[in-house]
Image 1 (cartoon, rainbow, N blue to C red):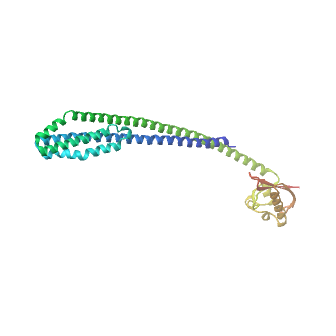
Image 2 (spheres, helix red, strand yellow):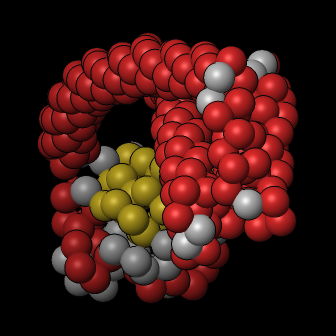
Image 3 (cartoon, rainbow, N blue to C red):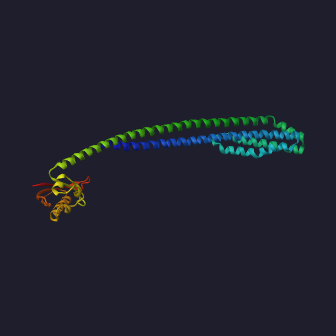
Length: 333
């Protein structure tokens, strides 16, 4: 027989495999999601640093443009200043949107200082237009002192803060990348191990099933051999239509018919109607009562001597206890 513990082990292994793989998949998915967030934060940090550097470059260009305008009076020198007035505020605003609330320490101060700086440059430009070069040069010289130094100091502090933020995001992204790789490697190893174990159990179950089928085939062969050599007439009929599904050599010899003629036939196909009816009634009684019925009957076959038979009708039950076949054993008395 097949070892049912192996079948249970296979089902249990599949259940464990499904649970473990689901758990590892959830962990790997969460780790991958965290890694995606980290890469996104790194990308945002790069973007923040780029916007800061762009704003810093624009302010330097604006100062150079205003200085050139004060010295030469060439209005074209103010193009960089006007462009900075349009773009710098937007760049700082977008930096605020990209940075989390916990990393916006210097942004308000930077925004206030840049706006103050642009207003001061606007005042210098207006003074140059209304009061001439000398007055505007005086304002420009005053602007290049301590105020300009303070602004450069603030820009340096901002640059350091955003660079540190970028490095921190990059470091966390690398850590989460390694963690995700670890989860994926663990999932792969567990999957391979469970697949291997399940394959081993399935192979062993298949081998046992094959051995059981071989044993069953050997038993059936032996049983058929025994039935064929019993000197009694033996029939096996299905419980529904009472058609013959098995007949031994004694049955073919006593009836003078071949196996092909007997298999699938009814009692009335094998003997006169009266004898056939007696046999069929006994079989129906055995099936109805689920018990053995014994009858005395005659076997009348043209061209053969009559036989007086002692026949047992035995119901064969299925696993649910319901009649599936009826066994007929007849002895010549």
